Length: 288
Image (tube, rainbow, N blue to C red; front, side):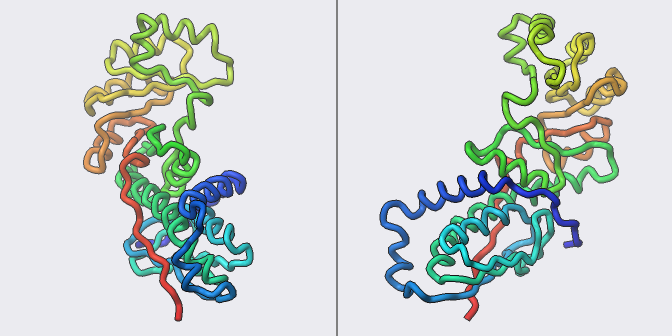
């Protein structure tokens, strides 16, 4: 795989520590690692490498490191690849040196986080590559694993994608059920106009050109063009004429994404980035 610039952002340490503590508690239960504790002397030390078993894009090293250091704060964790960097099958991602018990006990927790987030980053990178040369950016959705949203959205960024809203609290997205519950698009947007502050972004989901024309009559920031075919998307982009951000959603796959991007939309949201990635396979290889 070709070289790639390291991902520049880091996860908040408190968020990492909390998630790792919960994951370790789940694995250790009330008795701890009864296998390792019986076999390995308390003072033994060792060295291991985290090795990729397939090509991919890495994300989640902060979590992997934190898992080991939660059990031995003096562990040395040396990154060979940074988050956002590419690794080839058989390549070393990081090396870990410290108390053997800590290395063996934290192994699965570290690899679970690393595999999940690297899988998301790898899939995102494939979508980003598929739309190279177009103006479209690849975005995630809220279809995330409960409790892991911040990490999974981070992994999307590591793969070259962009983030949609993080939750129900940071932006308005008027969907079809909101419109139905309000009695129509106009009623929903009129109520929003009376309640939303000037700093809150408003996006409206539409699935017809008539709905789009109606939505553009209100002070909105973006339109989500839901389940439109490519020809309809092209018409929608022309209607918008740069007045608001255009986002395509629905029916997006690696096979269809480039054709969707050719319509001229600004964003393409892909739920599969976080709800259907394949974990990046890696292992902890002991050094004799």
